[in-house]
Length: 364
Image: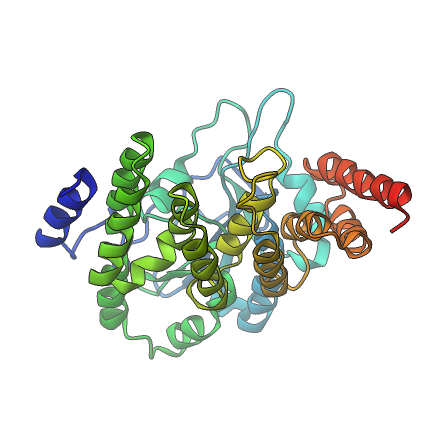
């Protein structure tokens, strides 16, 4: 057995403690609200008994968050006083050169974001308490993420804000099965904990450039726990390329986009961008499957309704690499428009100019 196989065998033979894979789980009392600054609305010092809350984590630089905010705002209006919505900005990069941008962001959102808003950090010296006691404690490493706190002050649901409607309706109606949700979440978190351990072993294999060992770690884990494939499908694709199994990679890449990550915009964008990244090892290599990158990016843009600058940028570059310069310019123009006022505006604008120069030079 290789080092990867030995590790995986021992890991899958060891019973996983399903009860507490992370410090904060569904069913637990909600942690305290320790924000650095209340930006908008009436501050919430504590969770009042008998009141339902939605605590949602987002950031000014997060494209998907901008899609979720108006949706949460409509839910706040729907439920009025029955549910208090609190948006907490996390993971903002704050320094003397880049001060807190949350107040300006909220002001710009206007009537699309009228619920209570707070910042996890309002100054360079502030500790990110909410990111630690809520997000990290719950094993959540992506935003936007929402938590429903029920009338007893317990976490009733954790997930993507665009999927909160039915769980929230059930919590409000008093029909939410907290015990069932707790058990389901615990099992899902076991998978997530397993993914973290597998990730470390794959990293070891990559450092040793033992590509086949990394592939085996993933394949044997998927055989035992099929749901884990969504976590490591993109990783496996690039390991197949490193192992020079080009045909296998091409076939698996199609499966990734059509089924394994078909509903995951972030994974689709990661796959596409890594293939076409101008600074990446595949950007000019023979294994760069540009057609796959276009398909993945198209799907990511579709999932995000064409409202995220980053995914549009990825699609624009993929189309440009595929030779469809005219459409690349069209898509990149939309990306630039959506990036106005964001840190990536200049990068996206420079790329658009590159496309236009290429078009003028070739006459395409």
